[in-house]
Image 1 (cartoon, rainbow, N blue to C red):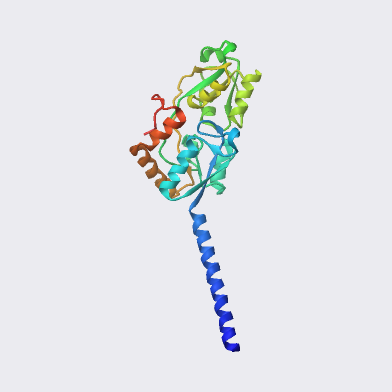
Image 2 (cartoon, rainbow, N blue to C red):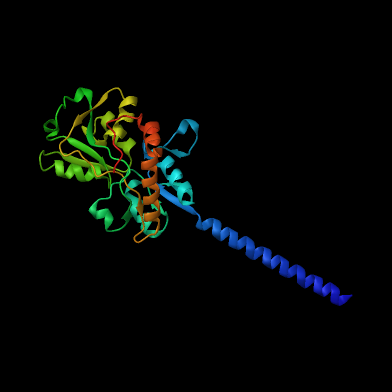
Length: 263
């Protein structure tokens, strides 16, 4: 009888051990199928928080990331942070990839791999309607703001070779708009599709064109030599070819024909 009890006890131990190992294995497998997307949730309609409906980050990039995750077999979670810290967080492993309307500049390519561009928008300057600023020449001697680490910051430095103005930076785009409204900034360089949303909410603002306003287009950043880059590239190509990308563009950018999906 004692032998039977001992045998039963040992069997139960083995069963629990196998169950624990199986649970641990499944947990590890599930974790491997999850990816953390780093973004800066202050850049509508690419990514932003709709505070009226909660704290979730929504937008074009958020929807696109989820669609790409579905095609590549990954569950996507979104982590918000300042734009200037995104590549550093990618390098340190705090996030698995970055989607934030980010262009694959030569400097960024030194620290990350990028997919092909998936969307492109030109740059313009946001100014107050009463400022008297009509052309880029009118910003001479004035203060222009850009987001830290953005492509607009690089464009501003190029623009300074043409017109002499003071350049200042802020971490978040809403802060830049606030600085215009407070009179501390005379202009802000911003992507056209982003400035449109701020103009709708601020009747006092308008935009002027700037030279060399083209961008290379937004792309997804991954760690160097990541196998995910090619997987997401293939998924992006599929979405461009089957019309899914067109539907997302129509949803978040009102389907304007002037907005081109990057090829």
